[in-house]
Amino acid sequence: GITTVTMANFQWHDADGFTWTYDAANRSASFWKEIPIKESERGKKPPFDEAAVMKAADAFMDAHGFSEIRKKGGVIQDIPQFHPLMKGGGTDSSMPCITNDAVRPEVGSPRLGLAPSGVGTASPGIAPPAGAPDGDSGKIRAEPETAIYPSPCWWPIQATVSYPGEREGRKLADSYGNDVNVSNIAIDLQTGQVANGFVQLDENAERSSYPLIDRETAKRRLQSGGRNPVWPWGNETGNIEVHLKTIELVWMRYDVWNNGTNDTYYLPAIRGLGTVLRGKGMEPEEYRTIIPLLADDVFEDVTPPGPEPLPLGGDAQMLQAPGKR
Image (cartoon, rainbow, N blue to C red):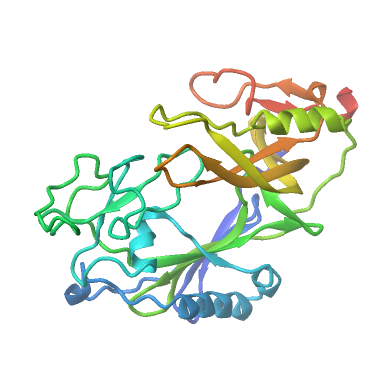
């Protein structure tokens, strides 16, 4: 007979033209709607109204019974590909290409629209497209060799609104200190309609009592960079400085595999938020790190699924069941 159900999905269509899929094992729902793109609009700079995008996403959440998630406050994902549109750069038919240059002579120049980087990535710049005049000199600029995407670079057609997760009044974070989103809603910029997204519903959780690290250990690990230490790029012009502006208590989501199934833990953790300064001429970077507050000896090594075992340690560990301790 059946001892454990590991997956159960079902799908339906609603009156608004959305196709919904519910994953019962993970208590998540995803949805999408086909929105035809006019050939005449392809490659053109789409309209972008931040307030209208937020209004469309919030209205969708309220209309489908997700008001409690909506109340946590959504934000438009600020990814490098979206910066030129948010900052009003480019022309109607040409989007600036994204490069992975960390340091250039024009750092900070308005025409580059240098974007704040995410943790663990080089500071991406926005370069004019090939054949465009180069701001100050007026010379024609060649295609950057370090362009992330080949030219021409197309404008994004959707904006994504993310809603952060929360349990018992405390934010959810992943094992690197980033927010865990419980919903993403993609808005089609040409029509202003919701195109697709997902919602993570509340999950039932069992409670366990594990020993914690002491204050001095937590402080020392935070000063050492926690689970997300800062590494040099190799082109710094001075000492690297990390300034933590906020330290907060959060739940760290920790996913592991056990006997072929996925287990999710929410561990008490301290998260630090701040900036990294790499020296003169380099833009400040957003920085975050996290430290789980559980004692080291409550973790045990496990072998993750896959054709070849991964190295043990780090994420290849799981919490011991209370009965094992």
